[in-house]
Length: 312
Ligand SMILES: [Zn+2]
Image 1: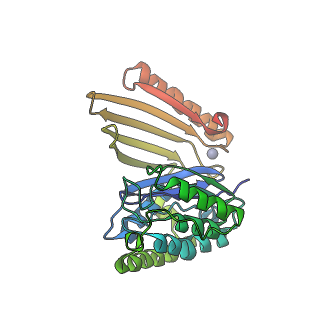
Image 2 (image 1 turned 30 degrees about the horizontal axis):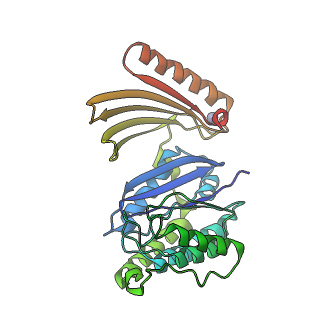
Image 3 (image 1 turned 90 degrees about the vertical axis):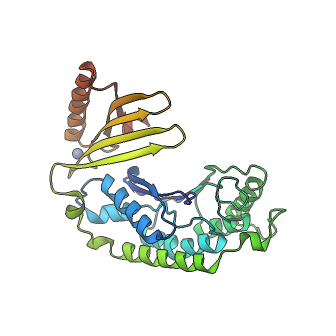
């Protein structure tokens, strides 16, 4: 199986996530703060960032056909109409273009209207209808914190829809139309975002990849990531080999300040992609040796090797 789009449903009140999968592996991800005032802007940044992770890709068609959307165009106050609008007008047309072998719905349920951590208004009926429209081969329960208020109803709705059975009677006991209503301005903001993303998808083959990723041997980027659960501020310097034969090995040097302990940890990571060419595999081993020497010299604390084909 070489083509595997994954649709992730995630709560977008805080962050916008994008994932790019090439040849069955994650080639690029992005997590950027959602801008509720300008969804087009923050969504576009997430998309560009996810693409930039993948390095320069010689076959634009391959890149674009492999692009999967984990779209968080649905943020605070969004309910069933918004979710279903995005599915109908953006996700399904892309899937029709792409003709996937398998659709996986990462069905997180923290966007349910009873979820204590989020401010979205998705319902069991909405989930069931989404499942019916998307017709996924696999549905994975990814999360959700309203254990009694959401999960039994949502999962029943999903299961009935997957089985092709009538889900019309599934309703949460505390469901109220005014609670799950979606304001008109949110509906129009969603429609504008979807229109911008439709344009982006339609013009994807015109993208100047060399302008995005450069023409050198490596694509370089720096990322600053803050992990709010553990109060860790990390800076990553990443190099991605722009290889014409495979998706290219990667080297990441990371420096993370663990604010609770006051410790700074420096690590080096080498990633060998699943279908790495011989040269990339050898070069990645060389990079690992170089990083290991940095550990011996006391400039790095640790090195990690991720050999994706060997790990799985
Ligand atoms: Zn290669």
